[in-house]
Length: 105
Image 1 (cartoon, rainbow, N blue to C red):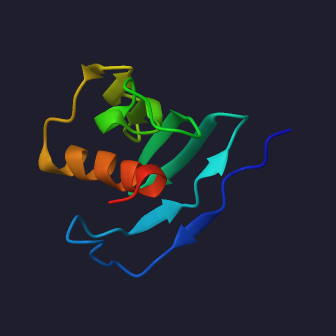
Image 2 (image 1 turned 180 degrees about the vertical axis):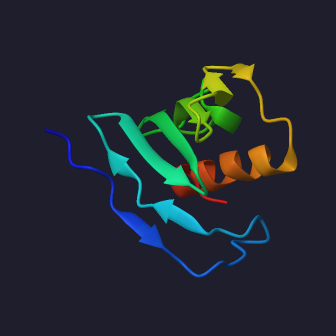
């Protein structure tokens, strides 16, 4: 059985000039390459490899990333290329938070 994510409530802060974060979960690994977590009511799942790849976001370690809203609607999808790219500044900030976690700034 996979444990539920640990929810961490934080005081709203600005993370590297991106966005105020009111709630997030600590990302946790589902299996050897799959990770998931939550940021401000959005849920994300990603396939993260140990080394960067030409197929990753910005040639990084994330080859797949899906971000859904609190209703389960996919707002962003990357599968070795953008199927549904971030459109709004908030969506881009969500992608930046995840990519920074695994690939650095």
